[in-house]
Length: 228
Image (tube, rainbow, N blue to C red; front, side, top):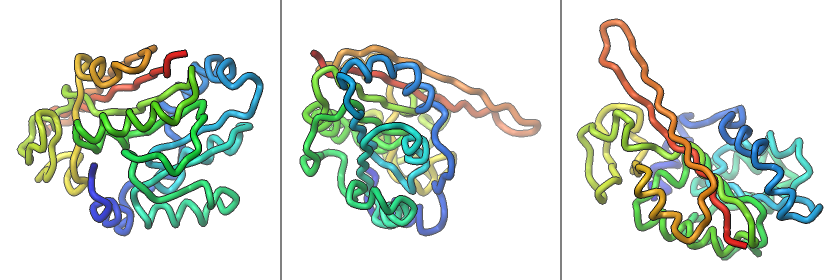
């Protein structure tokens, strides 16, 4: 996983501070709400975000009748989110996604938005094993905007952590961000072997500018369910 110190620097200099919720997350939540409401049996939904940052997605869930929890690797970002959402202060903690034992489990939904994708292959597997233990039966996991191997930056010069994880980018979107894992369909099916995969959506956007090289942004959205 991208180190705590790297994320601290990112937030200290004002990068990655967002003020609005992810439209991809909002769309996944609305489209799959019927599955969540079935699993909760008319109780308040219990939701956990991995990598809440400064809390842009919390604004969305504040409008819903849910119990929201979050874990974030950056102490700086955690502090900012706790200041913004003082009523949730005790539910927003600083920690590592690979170990979620500090939570009591029974979550209807656990999700991340472009957070777990900043991990190595081994760390992703550890995180999803921990996620599986925290979800209730029939609970959902959303992986929002995991980076695809079709992303232009996958081929840029960088340090290879494992076959699909890169770090120390000297150019491109991920300069100074730390490590990034890029996935394809085959790897996603393998990663989620202990889940029931409900949806895999790959989005590819090509940016074309006059007098500049063409760049391709490519991401995956994942909906998986813990078996009943």
